Amino acid sequence: MKMDNGTKNRTVASTAMNATSSRAHTIVAVTFVQKTQEEGQQAMTKTSVINLVDLAGSERAASTGAAGDRLKEGAAINQSLSTLGNVIAALADIAADGKPPGKSKIIVPFRDSSLTKTP
Image (tube, rainbow, N blue to C red; front, side, top):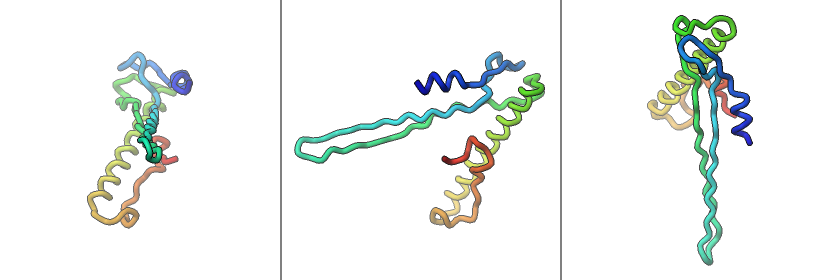
């Protein structure tokens, strides 16, 4: 099962703040499909996707006592969370400027982190 594979690949490490600190972001997409058919009518299918996101925690390096690989992981986590904040801020600015989609000159930094890259 995919959830079992994800759990096996999940990175967890101990820091001074948390004995089992998650060192990775996790995104799980759940797809719901509803199929209906009324008598004498065409079948209808509705599909929805819900993305469940567990972001690795942002921690101050001095508070965690992290060093070496843990320190590098923490810096990467903080960078990706910062990029996510920048993406959200840019999208909010685009929504607020009132221009049609694709006409705004605001650049959304999706590619600045693997967390925010679009498939």
